[in-house]
Structures are given as structure tokens and as C-alpha cells.
Image (cartoon, rainbow, N blue to C red; front, side):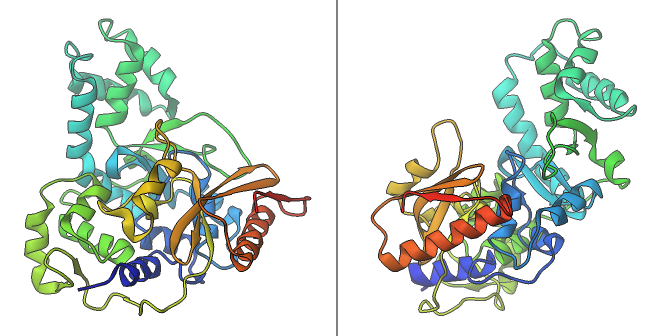
Length: 352
């Protein structure tokens, strides 16, 4: 058996949160199997709280250099992943994405020839990246019975499209424009992606875990059979929880430093049972009814508050009063975050 505190420390170790690491940004993105990225800039803060000496330009250059991409993957959400991971994760998650799309939009697009829409959309993208609005408008002439927005949604759900720069490049702005992953990366998607590799990569970044945990993170179903095939390579920590035999499982007495996690941080979204990092009663204060996920404050390994940034100000909202020592450490992290985001400017930290 593994205690909740030991499970917390093991997860933090896999998530690079027990200390800041000297990995490159690309190495960290691959280790973490990507960072959730519905909003353009949280991945920068996700790497900042995990890596020593990380600067925004490092990730920006990976984006413009096509070494990382933003694409819909696990749980049907936008993730920032390495180019190599994109090419096997997207075909592996595509059946789930297709089912989710049909469930959400099937009635609205019942009269549309979806295969024809995808074929026509891919032809349009041969000319270069296009926004969703431009794609929908261009497709509407050939498919007059379906709304332009729905035509665009068909293409974005059923074809592997990446969001291209300047979207999500630090210091820049721009609408999301799309290109095919194959054209943007100059390589074809993997023909036979491995669900076993998915489970093993998940354990390296998020374990120990149950089958339900892996399915909650990935959005995939039917993974119990995959885990059974892997069982000879795994260790069982309880009747339902498994792990890699050589993965780090620190002693529960190992201290966990104060950290300010990014909005949408995968640490909070990647387990069926999230009490290893956040109490159930706190989740509604972190994850809003419209699907936003606030930046959070880790104290002794667990979420104990949220933070929000408005340019040069960070406002901290503790769930319960911090001790003087905790408040001092949170203040230091918030000051470091602001110096990372707005270097050389006057900063304010409120709520402590």
C-alpha cells in the first residue's frame, strides 16, 4: 500500500515539482507528455515553475522552429507537445476525438458529408494556414446546407491540425490559424501508435496510477486490457494502483517546496482521484463552471490557494490563512514569477 502523502511526493517527483530541474524546455515538454494549452501562455509558466533558468524565448523558439506544436489531443483539449509526440498521440487519440465530436455535433451536421468536408478542407490548407473563420467561409460555398462554423468544426475535429505561430509565441498575439500536422512538420503521422507506450509515458510523468487515472488523463477507454498486457513490466502498489518498478517514489517525509502552478496545469487534471494533490472541497474554487482552471498555490505538496496575475500584479487567494513562513515563501515565488513575466518592472503582490 502507498499512503496519500507518499503518493503525493511520487507524483510531484514525476512532475518535476520537488525541485527545479536543469532540463531543456523540449526535454521537459516530452517528459511531461505535453502541457495543457487552451490558453496561449500557461505553458510558459508551467515550465517556469519546473525548470531552473527557463526563459520564455526558449519555448517561443521551439514553437517557431516547429519543434513543439499546439494541437487537440488528450481529453479533447489543446496541448503543447513535441513534434515527435504529436505524430503518434494524435492518431492514437483520434477515435476518441471523433466519438466526442459526433456526440456533440452529430445532430447539427446530420446532412453533411463529413469525409467530403475534410477532403475539401485539406485541399484548402495546401495553400497555407487559415483561421477557422476563413476555413468555414471557404467551405460554405461547396456545402451550402451546413453552417460555416460547423464546417470548420468538422475539419478541426476529424483532421490533425496544429495551431501555428504567432499564436502562443511569447510577446506576440494573433488568431489561431491552422495547418495540417503533416505539412507543418514535414512528416507523416505514425501508422500504428502504441497504447502501451501511452500508458508507460503516463506513468513516468503522472504515476503511480490506476486504470481510471490513465483514462481520465487521456480520454481513452478500454485501457484495462492494455495495462494487463503490461503487467509483467509493472509493480502493484495496491489492488488497483500500478507503477513502473524503477520510477521515483520518494519517502513521504521529503519536503515539497512552495510552487505557483500555471493555469490549466496538468497536475490538477490528470487523475480520476485528484486528492493526491487537491482536496475535493477545493476543486470548485480552482476549476470554474465554464471550464477555466486558475493558477494554484502548492503548500507542502497540496493546493492551498489560487493566484491571478494582472500584468505586474499577482493576487493570492489562500483557502485558509498561511503561516508567516508559508506567506513569506509564497511571496518569494510570486515575486519570482513577476520578474519572469515582466522583468525589470515594479511589481505588486496582494492577498498575503
